[in-house]
Image 1 (cartoon, each protein chain N blue to C red):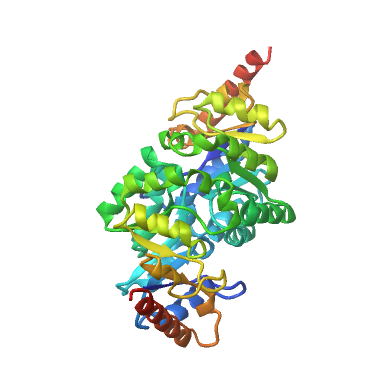
Image 2 (tube, each protein chain N blue to C red):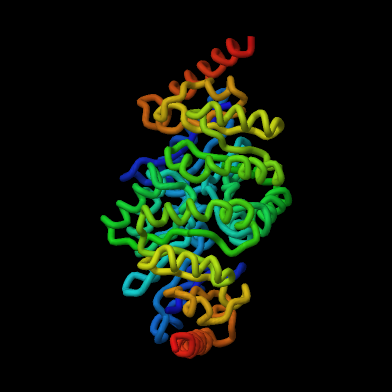
Length: 225
Length: 225
């Protein structure tokens, strides 16, 4: 129920850093997978990065927040899959027709988990995205993806997504640096919490990851009573 | 007033293909620059691709359609600039606060041209984006970027963008394969038309590019009368 965001700090070799972090964390009980952001993929190319995860069964999510026409997203997806990624994040904002319909179909064919962004956690999300949250949730419903991103920092939004999309997996960022505590989102219906720097910039990433999983379990056991 | 979209076909070496196309087209009169899409950048990494354009003065646009929080977009931008890109495309729907405000500031510091997507040309754009076009144009106005993308296939939208944002550069895709003719968008207020396959998949890309520029000029001379 923990996904680790592997975002390399500046001034390190990103492939080396990601490889090392992955080896350190891959077998920690409760770690379901890893998420790699656009900056590292842009810098290294998908092939080089994906290769790090070759023999891994967990989630390997390319967090590209795709927001293009269908054909371009499909071409991107195919390159990610060849590189070894097994899940991809796209925006619901671009709509279904000639956009997410094509991406979703190709994801199913290739066995890739599609994760859609309903809304985001930063203040700018209120300016446009929140004003059309109904429409965005409706796009998610029509596409019926494997998962959806909903912020742990805005639990009202998360609860609404859970209620309106009962069977989708919810992935929640915002734990740690952005203020939410481990387990908060899980207790409101999320399936996975995404944690990055709180783990990867710590002195002992393995220990911190394990303690976050312990906190998630502890909080879940209390809120489910 | 012509920007060439360099999107490599499948089953070619993308760097080799882009290098060759760039050499063929760089000094065609009227070609103002090149646009590289996400699939090629993902496959090769920005460094390898950007290097192709090292000694070039024209536009080298990374068409990533960025749509993330500000910090992630800034990290991506910095990698693109180190690689040799001098313009980047981002979505206006992520809003200003903690998103495009940060990206825009860093673009100005680094001398990079920021291009925002107002709306798109595919049918799915009507489902969500068009319903908040007012808000999207307002985000563009607040950010005051160098340029904005508006489709040549939907000239009513293009005219509206021109009217509401009189000083921004307008880049129009949709010429050729998608149905618009060279010069159509320029006559409605666009500054650049983006053409890809009609040029790059032709027998003689240099000749086709030159003839498109001639058609643009011919149409412009008529519509400006």
